[in-house]
Length: 77
Image (cartoon, rainbow, N blue to C red; front, side, top):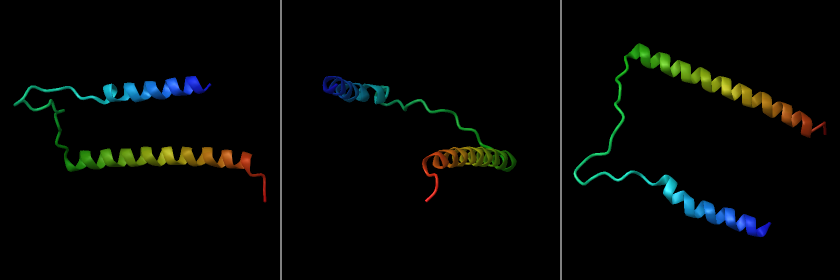
């Protein structure tokens, strides 16, 4: 078991720098950037409302899960 744990740890240590490495660009060139779009006030408001509603739904789902978990753990004090 210890050997397996050590092997996994070493694999993560050796593999992680190569996974996070960025592509090299030739000297004098800028890295490729994603094109940015300029949003109007209405579009911006709609996007922020949509992301806020999505975050609220995720939070409510998380709360429901935590309540069901805590009911199973604590049966009363």
